[in-house]
Image (cartoon, rainbow, N blue to C red):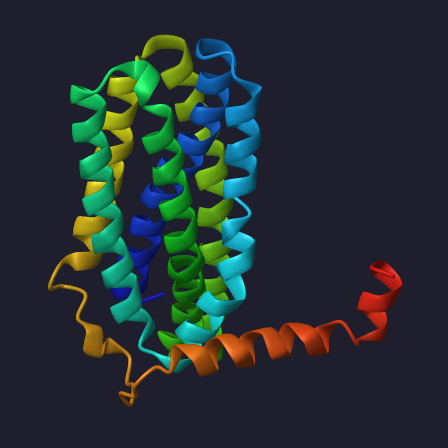
Length: 225
């Protein structure tokens, strides 16, 4: 496992802890503080955006430079987290629900592209079969650790911290994660890629054509009649 992939894994761990603990914290906050089941239902619906944009994110990761996409999505996530922190500091708590849900929606869409590109880098940054195995193992381990840490962080936030303090911690984690990725120590040209213009209409068509082909598989028709 080379130093560049270790940097990516560390950044991915921090961002995963931030986004997962945020979503868990929102469920607790809407239920115990706002006592609003409708907001919880909306949050659950919003998280389906990751499933909808997942195939599109995978297609973008395959036809573009994944490191470039990772840097771009990381930058966008930092900006919107800083905006949410600013809004949280200056707006009344009761009026914040819309912006909390909006942040969850945007991060869910961003994560669809970000996560797909992270997975692609596991083999594009591998120089040998052995290194590919190490990268895949590291990626799986980090994913599991992020789930554990996010649950622990959510418990701390719900027990001891206010909404503003919790958003501050989420933002700090995303900023630190972003600095690891946006650093010049992780150059885009690590992965050789022939630049091509992305045709989004064609991309959408091919993506959902592929999903349509999956429906014809015998395994799928048995599981989902």
